Image (cartoon, helix red, strand yellow):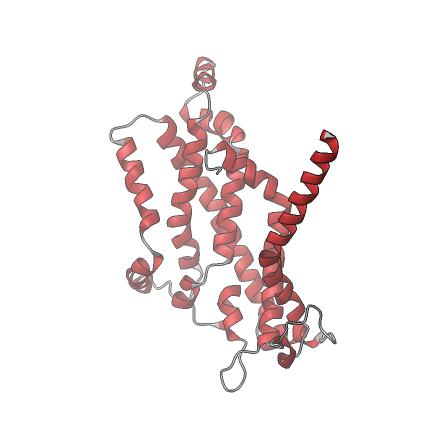
Amino acid sequence: MKAELSARMKVTLYGLLCVLLIPFVFPTWWMVTSSFKPISDIFAFPPQLLPQRYDWTTYSKVFELQPFVQQYWNSAYIAAVVTIGTMIISSMAGYAFARIRFPFANTMFMIVLLGLLIPSEVTIVPLFQMFLQAGLVNTHWPLILVPMFGAPSIFATFVMRQFFVTLPVELEEAARVDGLGRFKIFVRIALPLAKPALASVAIFTFLHSWNLFLEPIVFLSSAEKFTLPQALTQYTDAYGGPMWNIQLAAATLTALPVLIVFIIAQKQFVEGLAHTGLKG
């Protein structure tokens, strides 16, 4: 009787989850299927779950109308550099706040966290003036330096600090007995144990850099240097109207690697957040 009741509860729960999944899955399904439709069919009511005919030329036009391969490479290498740089900076800063005792450490950490409360729109003008004077406008340096030392890095520092706080002090004391200094303890003991937190930082930082939109619009003006979010806005017709099917095809290609990375690394992402005390 209990086994039958448990089976019914599981079926009911899975059915409820499938219903709740529809609002999240349908926009992605609509994006992918609409990328194969003519523009007249995209806004048909009721919406068509599948195209009546598949137009594969939308994907070829993505590469014809924009230097999409170059733009793809721009987003990929910028996201990779920002991710690696943020992992290095945040792990060192997080370890310092968690393990090194220095005056006003907690106060300084709270001041650092206040950076999360400042919208990027507030600082974008002074940042533009600073990079303009340095001759770095219309280069990729602002897209690398701003996230690496901005809000994503602050959040990553918080995640790493919370993880290092949970490490047993006895590990460091044993390492000191063996003659290891502070930096070697960090590299040989703390950092290898922080792989779950580093995985969370890597995924979060990569997604943030990949989806960055405001900074590319402000700092870049050449199509060859555009990143993907900015490139998606450039698929317009002669009258300035959006070419919806081509935009959706480009958006599908843009979202594909992000979905693959998250599906592969979601276990490490959840595990890292659980170890840092951020789970709900």
